[in-house]
Amino acid sequence: MSLNKRARSFGQWLALGSVVGAVCGVASAVFLYLLDQATHVRTSHEAIVYTLPLAGLGIGALYARWGTPIRGGNNLVIDTVHEGDKQLPVRMAPMVLLGTVLTHLFGGSAGREGTAVQMGASLADAVAHRFRVSPATRRELLAAGIAGGFGSVFGTPIAGTVFGLEVVCVGRMSYEALVPALVSAVVGDLVTRSLGIHHTVYPTPAALPLTPGVLGKWLLFGVAVAGVAVAFVELVHFLKKRLEKSVPSLPLRMALGGALLVVLWKVVGTSDYLGLGVPTIERSFVDPTLPPEAFALKLLFTAVTLSAGFLGGEVTPLFFVGAALGNVLARLLGLPLDLAAGVGLAALFGAAANTPLALSLMAVELLGAGVLPHVVIVTVTAYLLTGQRGIYPAQRIAQHKHGGPLLSRLVPLRDVESQPGATPGEQPPAKPPATHEGSR
Image 1: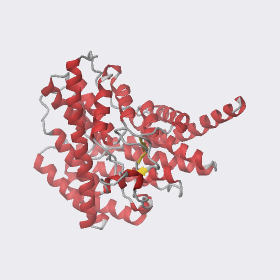
Image 2: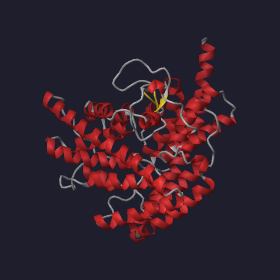
Image 3: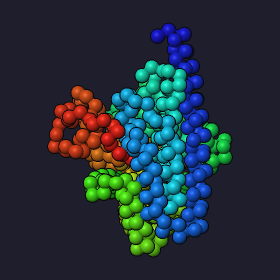
Image 4: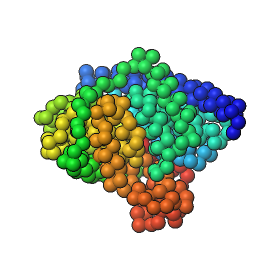
C-alpha cells in the first residue's frame, strides 16, 4: 500500500472513529447521569423496591411489544459483528438505556457495561449505514462502538479498546479494528468526562514484590476466582433456561424474578446487594470485617436479576463479587487487602467474559501499575480454568484455551456449551441471532 493510501485509510479511521466515539461518549454521559439519579432516588426511598415485580411486568411488556428484535442484547451485537446481515436497530440504544435505568431505580442487581456496549454498537452501526461503508469497515466500526461504549462508561479507554477487539472471539484478537477502536474509546472517554461525568476512584494498592511464595498464593487465588466465575456462568444459564421454559411470557417472568428479589432483599436484611453495589466494592478494599458471604449473595442477586430478563450487564456486579471474594481470600492467604480486592475485581469478570487482557489493562487504569504482574497472573489462570464457557454465548471460538491448532471454522460458544462432548470443528451451524436472548 502506498503512503497516500495509508494516509487516506488512517484519516478515514480518525474521522469515523471520532464520530462513533463522540456519539458513544454522549450516550454514556446521559446514561451515567440518569443511572446516578435513579440510584439516589432508590437509596432515599427504599420502599420503592417493593414495586420491583410491577416494574418487571412493565419493562417486560415494553420489550415484548417493541423489543423483540433487540432482545439478544450483547449476543446480538457479537452475532452481528460475525454475520453482518441486518443492521442493529437504532431503537436498541434508547430502549436498553430506559430498561437499565428502570432496573436500577427499582432495585435490580445489574451492571452497566451491557447497556454501554449495546448503545455503542447500535449507534456505530447507524453511522456505518449513514456513510455507506463496506461490510469489512462496518464490522470494524461495530468493534469501535463496543470499545467506545465500554471505555467511556468506565473511564478506561485502553481497556475499552482491547475489550472491543477481544470480546468477539475467544483465541483471536481483531487487530484490523485496532485504530478505529482506539480512536472511538479515547474520544468517547474525553466526551463523557467533558460533560461532567466523574467515575469512581478506587484506592491505589502499594507494589508487592513477586516472590515464589506470593506466586503460589496468586495461583490459589486464580483457582478460587475460576470456581466462582464458573458458578456464576452456569447459574445464570441454568436459571435462564428454566425460567424461559417454565414461564414463557417475558412480563410474567420478570415480575416473578422481581418478586424473588424482593424476598431475597427482606431475608438478607440489607440493601447492599441491590443496584450496582459500588459502596461495598469500595469497602472491600479497606474493611477486614466485610461479611465473608457478601460475594455469594451478590452473585445470587445478580443471577436472578439477569436470568429473569432485567436490563443491565455483568461488569459492576462481578466487580462487587470479585472484590468481595478478594477481600476474603486476602484474609485467608495473607495478601494485602486492597491489592487482593483489586485483583479479584478485574480477574472475575475477565474470566467470566473471556477477556483477560482487557481486564488486566482495566485494573491498571483503575488501580495503578502496582497491580502488575499480580492481576495478569490471576486473570489468565482463572480464564484458562473456566474452560469453554462464558457469559456471552455468542462469542466465537477460534482456538481451544489449552492450545492446539486453530479450528477449521469459528464456533459459537453456545454450541460448545450445549454439546460439551462434541468436537468444536464439527458443531452444527448457529441458529439465527434473533432467537438468542443473551446478556443485556
